Image 1 (cartoon, rainbow, N blue to C red):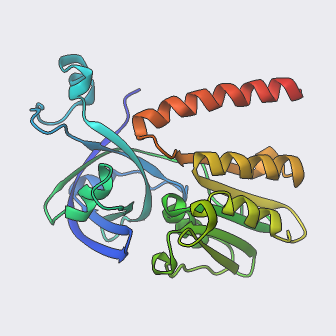
Image 2: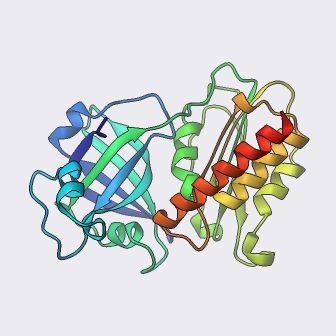
Length: 275
């Protein structure tokens, strides 16, 4: 079944930190954009290949049929930071590290009226209102989903959030009605650029009593190690974990897809060996 395409226009942008650009998009097609409950709601953003002419309206099935693969629009996956059906606005936060990458530089140079095409939304996680407490772990790529999740934590419920960013200037004000304990981890000045810092922070955390619902997303290698710790050393149920690598050091999104396939096979082998 073909994924739903939505075509929007940039309404405004905002620099919300030295490495984060917020893009707010609008358009009549938002009237039928699914307002799902997921706080990790994501979309696939399409970036046309420069110099390639596509028939309008853009139809990805036709593109795949009529164009060689190297001319297909590039696809990047991003979390929806906020969707306001009443205002008719969709907000996406983009990590931006200079001229590297595709989506970050686009967001940094985006102007009102620029076209934004996306597929989706998808998603699978929302904080369990019956959980005794919540654990949210991730880096800048996961920060939009973490921010959206914090806004859904019931009042007074304990929540520990561990977020890794470059330095103090990248911190954000995050709203939460729960009993939030938020810790920022900085790469700047940290050994090995902060590699392994999220895992060590989770290991050092004194878990509250009761059933946890955990969200662990970000760099794939870091996420994998935190997942192992929660399952093997903390005894967290698999059903209480939302775990996903959003990116992998040294790989673009196409290369990351290959990495995820490799890791899926390894995890299947691990589960079979422990069964």
